[in-house]
Image (tube, rainbow, N blue to C red):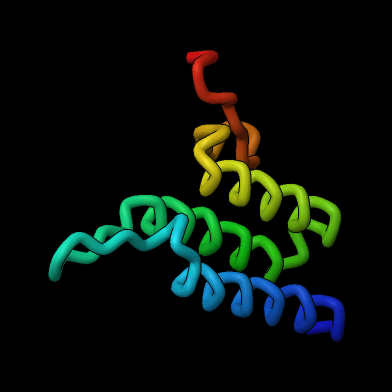
Length: 96
């Protein structure tokens, strides 16, 4: 594995760890913790991580996907993985 791959994978790990501290991912009511968005983001991050491990995506694509996740966490878009084209897609909320 080349150093670029290691750098990208470390960036993914740091991003995921930051999500656990992000109020957009975790909400608490009384003694109940809600993490609905975290499950979807974790699934997407797993796909990104796998593609990075095999150099199937580049740093530009990774950054684009991370920006999509940020928009999703801000409730601006919905995200879905397009299996036919093997890419992450976004749909603006209200355009469904």
